[in-house]
Length: 217
Image 1: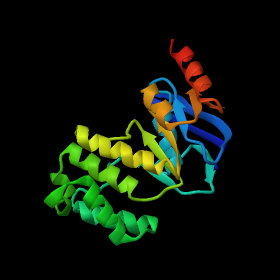
Image 2: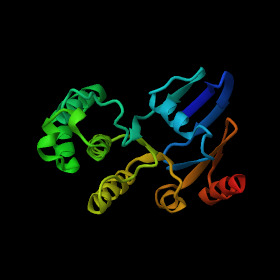
Image 3: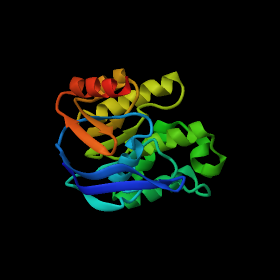
Image 4: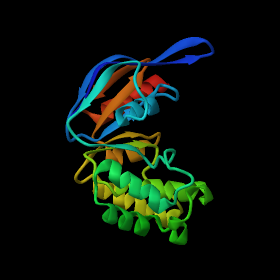
């Protein structure tokens, strides 16, 4: 369960206040994998970041009775001067999981070789993505937040990434932002539509897609 209580978020754009989440009160059910749909700039990524706790709302709060990931694949919080392994150790401590188990999973999954023990500043963007995705998948969350990323890397690595993510979805749920309706249908069973600061829940995923596509037309 994730509950939004009087949640509001806005930004200053060219001197004007732009509201992206407007006094939201809504409870998301447990066990549903939700497609978060909306036009570009609607505030989907902002909402995911508030759910993960990486940005704060202007007012209101978000309450959950389960563990929630950071946005899957997001590597912006890695310390550039630390090695990949050191970053993973830090993540393990923050989330209270077994350090050695997480290290082993990420090292095997990310396939970074000797770079796993080198500073993150020496990584390419693709290497950072593999490290971030591996760290995300290495921790068993109740809800995974996914912003456009269910796979990273070359074709073979993408297949592996999607297989691991699909396995996690057997035991967890997700909130997914994705412009591919094929992937939305593959991983989600209900939908959310964000439009002009308002968030609407749909038990029927196809109804959510239909409403979203009508708004985009």
